[in-house]
Length: 126
Length: 211
Image (cartoon, rainbow over all chains, first blue to last red; front, side, top):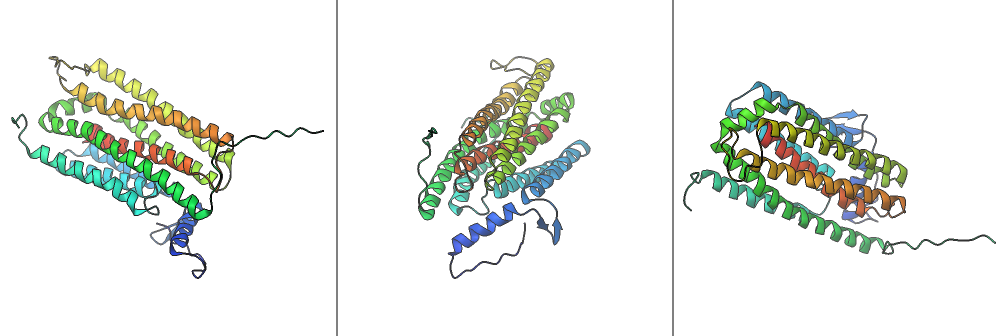
């Protein structure tokens, strides 16, 4: 999200520590660069703003439209919002990739299971 | 002679940076494993509603028309705001600002409490509409909806309640000097829980109230 410039000395730090420092600086910065524009808010506040805008858009779409397209769009919005919270607020962007795996594995399994259950005829004997 | 009172810290001593980082990652890994189990539990409850809802679209549409989205939208913004105040509080402890952290966390706890109060108001409205825990399968126009709706949303509500209690405990420990810019994993782990509760609500809001 933010692309602040930092002056590190890679010869004295490991790649992991440099990455951690960058993540820390991104969170602590008072401004955030989004789509080439510098916003006068911390990263967490910008994410909150995006979540708010997406939620308002969801409510408007739900109230105005009624086709199957609405369902697809609303689910896409919900997944986008959940992803923003998980990536930025829960720090999966910067934390160990094992944490991401621990989250995605059950999500993948339950999604496949749900899709299977949805195609099984309702009330079938097995 | 002046008296010196020593407060024995309940925290284990800080390890060298590398070992401390490993210990912190272990705490967070444990939390992620717990959250993975919660994913399965919530998936069962939400999935059960989805499968039933596909077969009963008119009943859910009637509930949406009767209930509206006003109250639940307010609740959604409350929870989103509480997630924001949580991370802003963590940002303060990363600056060694305990008072600032407690201020943001107090806001988080208050927003959580308001969420629960509004959920109670919503449940009252639903009960007036005849949406109840009809385990036996009553003959009302909303038969079968209540147990599926309440099991998921109430289970989530319990998580909010636990989160509020946990938030207060974190604030108390911060008051006792348990957290600093060098040690805030306890805050991070609570944050993981609270944001997970927010993520689950994002999904519930869309599937139960909007779609």
